[in-house]
Image 1: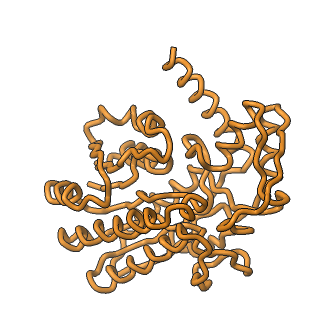
Image 2 (image 1 turned 180 degrees about the vertical axis):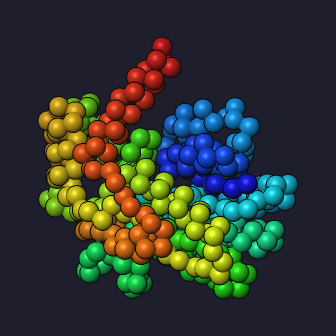
Image 3 (image 1 turned 45 degrees about the horizontal axis):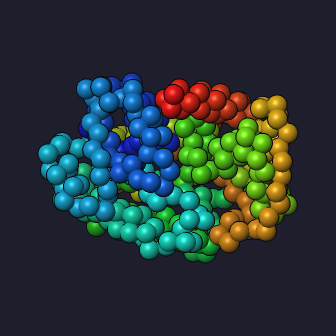
Amino acid sequence: MIIITGGAGFIGSHLCENLIKNGEKIICIDNFNEYYDPMIKENNIKTLISNDRFQLFKGDIRDMPFLEKIFSENRVEMVINLAAMAGVRPSLEDPLLYEEVNIKGLMNILELCKKYKINKFIQASSSSVYGNNSKVPFSENDVVDYAISPYAATKKSGEILGHVFHHLYNIDMIQLRFFTVYGPRQRPDLAIHKFTKFITEGKAVPVYGDGSSERDYTYIDDILDGIIKSIDYLRENQGIYHILNLGESETISLNKMIQVIQDELGIKAIINHLPLQPGDVNKTYADISKAKKLLGYSPKTNFKIGIKNFISWYQEFNELKKTSLR
């Protein structure tokens, strides 16, 4: 039995589906909060609800009695903690909420792993921990003491706390630094989803700065490959604590990203240039050599193909929403 927190979200729902197809039993924990329309999450897992290998618990990782009941009543082999308050810019507006969920919530889960002797753990970290790192590509050996957003700081804190529980309580752990994940079901607040919506609706796309900032966009299937190989690695090894980058190891500029989206849609984007935003990094670029060596991780999805797949999903999902409103 594997617990996946945040299991109804973008990455989590894909992971639940994949693991269930592989014969795993999954406990999905998600609070369906109002950060974005909870109906999106409901739709993400609608095909899983009737599966006898899937259990859904609606609740918050800050709620210790809620978690305790789940942990005490189930034989859990491993926890994959994807639950978090996400987003760099929103973390500037409510940093205490990010501390509560991303640090206290994680601590609750780690304490229960300690109590119930669950010694296999995967934690979702983030490329944001690198801040404006001047050395590229970003390596797990780089110093990450210079976060530039509360969100990034909470993710770095999660890595440190994870090491504490590994060291003191022998919890085998892999911390996965995700690099800008995209694909079908991507959250609506993220750039690719948001820009696709604006271009489709003929609205101006907000571009902060001159559009030269770069991201290492990682397709959802490649992220799933890294997570599943991390599960296998944890099962096969003991006494481990690893931090691993999961990226495509290729950078795409903001301008290029918009170009690819508008080409796929066949609609010219209207651009609204705005000042750079606090907390945003200039570039992300993953050195994935460690994940390749340890896991055999090998991302395969070309950015144009990934965008094509996302837009196909986006159009189908919006048709579904229109139908449900009739």
